[in-house]
Image (tube, chains in turn yellow, red):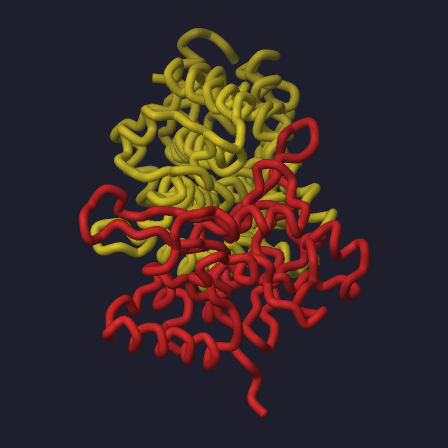
Amino acid sequence: MRKYIYTLIALLGFATVAFGAADSQIWGEMRIQNILGYGQEESLKLGAWFTFLQSKYFAWVFLGVLIGVPTVFFLHYKIVGQKVFPHSHNKHYAFNLFHRTIHQVAAVSFMVIIPTGFIIVFGDFFGGGTLVRMAKNLHGIFTIPFAIVILPMALMWIKEAIFNLEDIKWFMILGGYLSKKKRIINATQFNAGQKMWYWVCILGGLVMILSGAMMFFMDFKIEMLHNLTGLSHIDMLRASAIIHNVMGFILVAVFFTHIYMAAVAIKGAIHSIITGYVEEEEVKFLHNAWYKKLKEKGKF
Amino acid sequence: MENARMKFYCDESRCIECDGCSIACAEAHELPAGIARRKVITIHEGIPGKEVSTSIACMHCTDAPCEQVCPVDCFYIREDGVVLHDKEKCIGCGYCLYACPFGAPQFPREGIFGSKGAMDKCTMCAGGPLATNSHHEFELYGQNRIAEGKVPVCAAMCSTKALLVGDAESVSNVIRARVAARGGKGFNSYGWDKAYKNQ
């Protein structure tokens, strides 16, 4: 499956290189199909849908996410506060250099892709022109490192990211993060929230890369895609634009959550992905199933 | 006095698919290779009774969807209805193309990464936001024939006068006279309803 996706990305790249105006999938002969596809009875009316959603909702939802999610976390910080665990106990080396490097490449990519994405969404606020154009280019360029690490990242953590029955209990109490009390949570190396972020980041990330690549390359020809989706070229672009925005809401919201949990909600937890060492007390309380396993192996 | 509302109309019973409009446009505005602001297309080709050729470009729609979706708000609509855009604001994202019912916005490739440059489309020969008839305006948007009191070049060059452009009332009068002369037949122009909502 992944091999297939990478072939696809490579094909997208080649397709644009060898493209003359005569073979254009948008403005050449195909233009007729593209025009007929707009708002006809039998079509999906994606042009009209995109116009409606983009003109009325997308920017507002992004603004809602940009303000709403941090507001919720600010209130959580004020009301519930940080969980503090002593860092003086034993440590366990959980993330090796490979894990950390892959994670850091993805992290840096996200820290460029997400702010530049917001600059594009609120492009009128920034007045368009050079600044927003630069943001658009960076948004695309920093997708490349992310696209390179997404596969190794998916593979290196997939075993830990598979949901189990304990995760239902975690969701019922939201991992105990709504109370000040420290309680023992019976989670494995990744709790249900982390697993959720894994799937949103990996699957959502793939969706973002593919839909973004479609819009970036715009005028390319891959017959297989038309056969697969049954859509005209322009409708695939419209679908990409809609999907890219909607997936964007989800990814950004969960990304903010990831940052808050690591950097604020559990004091100092972020150091584990920098140094590779996790604290015994944190593991004992927040990932008890993992803790027991490590204890058996005599890791602490 | 009320403002005139500028419209395009292509009389499908007159269009002979000669491509003159498209070439006149590319020539007059010195468009780069690969950009065709106006194009002659044949829809429903091979279907008897339905096949029709028409000349298509930006229709300067009443509710211009491109203007609604632009994330940097680079479009502006003149009081006479001509839809124009600021190329120096445009970031080449492609959203206007996705919104356009006519496939009018086009994007030249620029730079080493081959990213999309600023959007290019028909200006109804009315230039852009820069100083009227300046060299800079010509470079970015082509001729500003409207400012010189001339007819847009595509309609001016149309050999069968299938392509009409002008204020709504004058265009309607011409069409009405033609339709009457044809015995009430041929009041069709692809995209006319969609662009102007019968206003």
